[in-house]
Length: 134
Image (cartoon, rainbow, N blue to C red; front, side, top):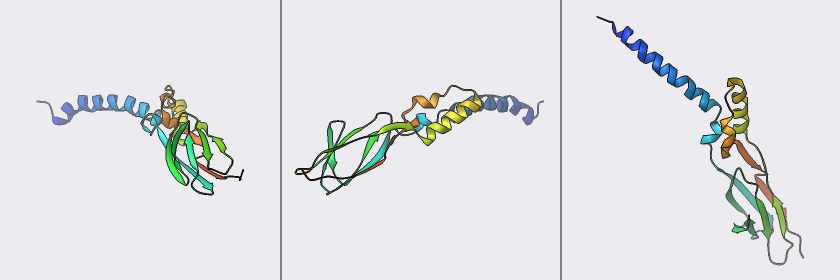
């Protein structure tokens, strides 16, 4: 009759064999489970200016909204009697994306995380403008 420890050995090996590839995958693709959007704050002097992001009115200043991490945003800030100011965000590698690159290189696994939106962030995250009078 086999002991219980001998019966558990094949199960333990199977669990270990399944866990190793899973751990490697997750250590190189954290960005795949990160959020697709990030917070953007927009403020103006004077307050109450319309904020239009990529052609869509999203509210008036001061405001916090969410934008897609992967796509650059074109932000227009306008108010009657003042000149319109336009700002553009730029995409950069996020902290999570950097972790994906480092672990992808260490484990020699394709950098799957760079396919996810979470690998990127938009800069700046806070926009504050002074609207000049016309």
